[in-house]
Image (cartoon, rainbow, N blue to C red; front, side, top):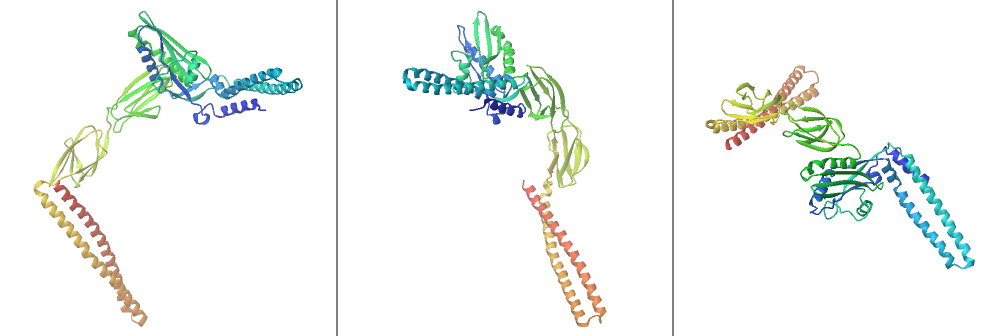
Length: 480
């Protein structure tokens, strides 16, 4: 026999252990929200009821979570036990009926024995039902009034549109038919010059209505007067007070709300907790803007912040060839490459170098921190400039090639003097010191010459690469 008191205790322990949060992954419980088209009772068309209902759907579509209270927690924790309790009660009624039928279908000798078996089954089922009811009651007693949890919520839609249609009967029938946990529905009645609007929310978890809002307005005031009702529905669905915030900024400004990056250029949300919040705008090259705002419950605050004040920026100017005169707003700043503090934007830039065409352009607040510029030689000197760079490249290459034999000769001389020194020492020992000293000095001199020629090789090699790059660049510039 199952012990439902133990089962209830385990469920409650798991709930408390989860620190007040029931997630969809851990508990497989996702709340479904559905909006029904308002029931129209007027004599005209019902287009208005569809418009109001669609406005409700739009206002609720961004809600992704709900703060549920202790009653909902109890209902969720005990929902499986409630279903099993109902099935046990149905099973008990069937056994009662079977026992009564025994009076007409069993012989006298079997009647007492069969009735005894049914009574034993009835006794066991009644005990199970009693334990289950006690477990359900205990689950409710162990959940404090202040307990709450956050559950994910999604807005559900029928296959044929955005709005559901109310079924005949109770709201619970509609909720059950569409598998909806929170059902938003209502009525629209036309009475002379007024529209009577009634909005309601049915909580199918606890089986009761949790909100009712009514108003009577004229058609011209409908758009303005319906807002409090929609806001009230949002508050009920969220399970807490809320506030909206819309932030707009110029350009590609980054928006931070409460130190959390929230968007670029524009940010909008209606899920903030009422109270004080900090909004900050950041943008490269500009002073940041920060503002503290107070959000009122049920209202949306629209905030526009700009970052129009540019800060001093340090920009590095590089040019090819180097050594060009740099002018900022017609004021000489130095020779490239160099770093310049730009005080204001836009700024006019001019690069000038003898034998090269001037280059003029503007930089603004969006310019890169490093500006590379290629100068072109003057038209009359272009072909000559290419010839000069070609001659330099060939000259540098030739010098590098000619330096290699010198290095090889020095290396070969080192080996020969070392062999001569060893041979002389092996044949005559220390008897001919003058020859040994001469060979040692010659070896050291050749080694020094070898190191020097090796260094010359590297210098000429890198110079050849530089001249090759200059030569290729000059050909590209002249051909443009």
